[in-house]
Amino acid sequence: MLPVSQLSAVREAAPCPEMAMSAADDAFENARFSYDQHVRTCRQCHADGAACAVAKHLLRIYNNARRDRMRAGGPATA
Image (tube, rainbow, N blue to C red; front, side, top):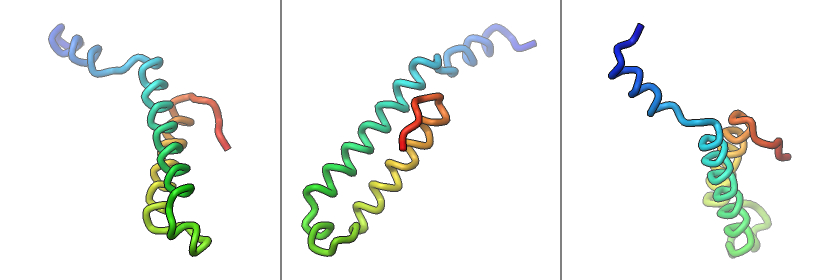
């Protein structure tokens, strides 16, 4: 059995499911917005017809956020 001081630390460190879901949703929405905005405004992405290095990086962040959101029990997104 853990001492009382350690129990309170464990309780404080564990986020409630609602907060974890909200954080996952916020990260997902932020990543999606950043990627979409970049692709719409980047001259290189439009000129080449292919994603630039920044777009690829933002897409990787978006995919990681989407995966984290699905692990947190959020709605599935395709």
